[in-house]
Length: 317
Ligand SMILES: NC(=O)c1ccc[n+]([C@@H]2O[C@H](COP(=O)([O-])OP(=O)(O)OC[C@H]3O[C@@H](n4cnc5c(N)ncnc54)[C@H](OP(=O)(O)O)[C@@H]3O)[C@@H](O)[C@H]2O)c1
Figure 1: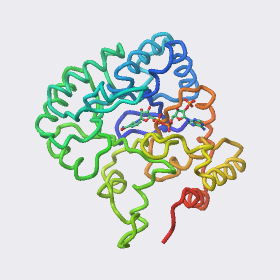
Figure 2 (figure 1 turned 90 degrees about the horizontal axis):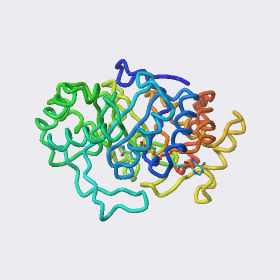
Figure 3 (figure 1 turned 60 degrees about the vertical axis):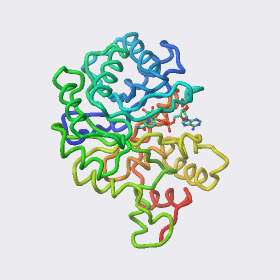
């Protein structure tokens, strides 16, 4: 396992982290098996959010951590807050928000509650989950100061933010924002498409994120890639999906070359980018986690990286 310092901080995290969004579907003993496998594989970074499973994922995670008997100081735990759940619209494990809320009181209260559900004393990092257009930067600054001073969170970051939004926040908050968690995968490549279509008139030339990839590299902010095997917005898994025959054929060809699985190749494709992106995987299957971590043995050639990008339906102008 390779490790990276998140945002060049002292958080020395595995470059493959485990997201616990889907952990609400497991029993505590099943979750304990997932966690112990992850740790055996060298994964030391776990990503949660107060809304996952409407809080149930936090609870199962915390109980499973206890069952496995993991020393808290040996792992990093990240939380996320800033979305208010709409229970009426949330169903079958899919959680929808009623609003985003970056008010001081909501952020502080939500972080305390998430930490309590996990049964932990502190988060190594805490992210603001989705930008709230009604955000008042002073309120966020006050929340982060409180959460740092009272020991709730040691470091902070954002998620799903563009570079201007980070600039605005960073201008006011006193802590350096270390992380931006964004969707990125072979089937979700907007962050790089626009850079290859500069000054063109096609759809891919549209810059949807204000140059976030370049911005984060310039400012030493680590991108965490969420949903590395999904297409669309939770539309499903692209691996072994008959909707994507060309991509699957190319992933299989490259996988055979390295004697790994397609999950490992989809992971290696993200890790190959020189921005040192951390991949946050959501598998709750210990065998699949082993397959995924085999990506660490794969260093794709530049041509393989481009071949996979093109097989995903992209073009080179
Ligand atoms: N910041 C944000 O807005 C945001 C949004 C979404 C997610 N996240 C974070 O990102 C993490 C990962 O998200 P995710 O769970 O959507 O990512 P993912 O790793 O792309 O998806 C995991 C799901 O795909 C299934 N899967 C993977 N490979 C498969 C294959 N070859 N065949 C069949 N099924 C396969 C897994 O099933 P098995 O369990 O059977 O392996 C699991 O249900 C979350 O836990 C969360 O921490 C953040």
